[in-house]
Structure formats: C-alpha cells, structure tokens
Length: 155
Image 1 (cartoon, helix red, strand yellow):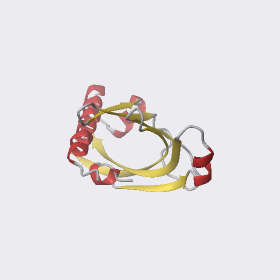
Image 2: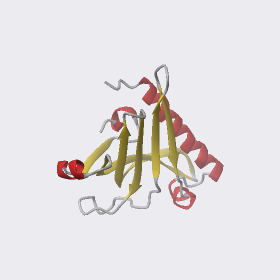
Image 3: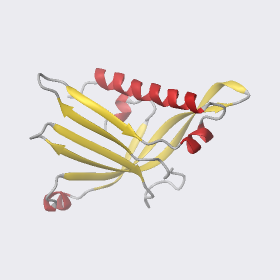
C-alpha cells in the first residue's frame, strides 16, 4: 500500500490477512479484500497547553474494493475490525469510510471521499476542542490528503 507515501498521518500499514488467489478466481464479482493494521498519527490536545503532542495509534481495518474498468470506476470501503493478528491495543471502533473514483472524459479522475465520524470518541482525542473545531481539523486533514494525492506520482 502506498498511503504512507502521501498521508503524513499514516506512517505505516501492515497487511495482516489477504484474500487468497483461489478466492479471487472463484468470485463472480470482482470484490477484493484484505485486513490491515494502519498506524494513525493523531494530535492530542490538552486544555492547559496550547501545544499538541502527536500519538501513533494502531487501527485494524477490513478493506474491500471493486474495480470496474469497463465503467472506469473503483470503490474502496473500510471498516475497523477485531483481528487475531492485530496488536491488542488496536482501535476497533473506527466508523466506516469509503472512496469512489470515476474517470472523467478527456482525462483525470473524480474522487469522492465519504466517512462517518463519532464525535463522542473524537472529543476524547481532541480534548478542549469544540465540535466545530474537530470538524475543521478533520476537513483540513482530508483536504491535505487530496492535495498530496494530486501531486503524488501514481506510476
């Protein structure tokens, strides 16, 4: 996976389990999957101090994707899961998210990112931040992803 190359908040991804070639060949639908342990670098805010500290948190995800070359589309969906190969401390309460990619006529790609957030959990990470500030921080992170993806060498 190349995400650590374009996402500064993801220093590492380890594959815990992959779909077997036999499962790929037997599938009538081209749905592929794997389970990864994704290290998420997140800021920890403290009420008494304006500075932030960065914390690396492991999260185990099931990733599933479908590629449709005939339509020029791709879908990637993720959901955190409990997995026996994940470290015991891995977060498993991360909400679903997904990416939809569609080729544009004349070149280029339209990219849509969808995610569900749990403000109750996010308030524990972003201590001292209002809900509006948390949403702003999340939006800034997503915007940074798109800027980095745009400049990333995809070859």
